[in-house]
Length: 187
Image 1: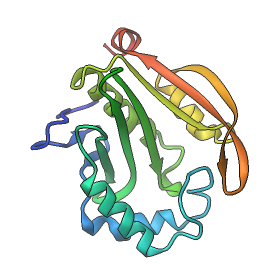
Image 2 (image 1 turned 90 degrees about the vertical axis):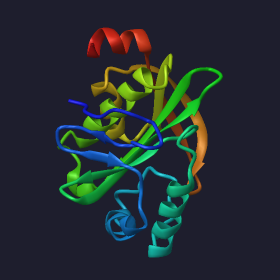
Image 3 (image 1 turned 135 degrees about the horizontal axis):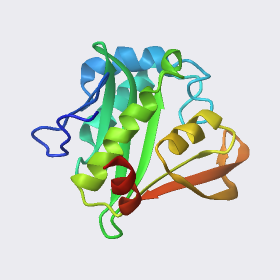
């Protein structure tokens, strides 16, 4: 259940049953560094390896200064600790949003990424008037693909050998959901 869904600058928080999605703060660095230095967490992400504390500092500072209008991003907070992050990059002209998320490995398999993503997608459609939300992941990242499927997204295609990740060419799988599908299914 999403409560307090707003993307307004003054009240930039979303509450779900278990999570608080809120703007990043400088004091989040230690929590983020703790999970981001796990190589398995960043296996399919374009993050530095190895991941040092200064990377977490740069990440948090970047998120603090990111435009909430063009790319709203939130820290995922569970029981007072940051356990991940989520955002949606807005293309206002085409009324689309590119969803991205990550979650600390020790919380994988508990439905938290789906819970956070459901809230953000819902806000994107209801608050920002988006016509479509999409996401993509490395084809080998089965857990991320499952998140997209659990959101009710449709697999739209695979871009073969689409980008380079740590010197290796990878396929990206794209999923999307249209506003009318979301409103019909999520009410």
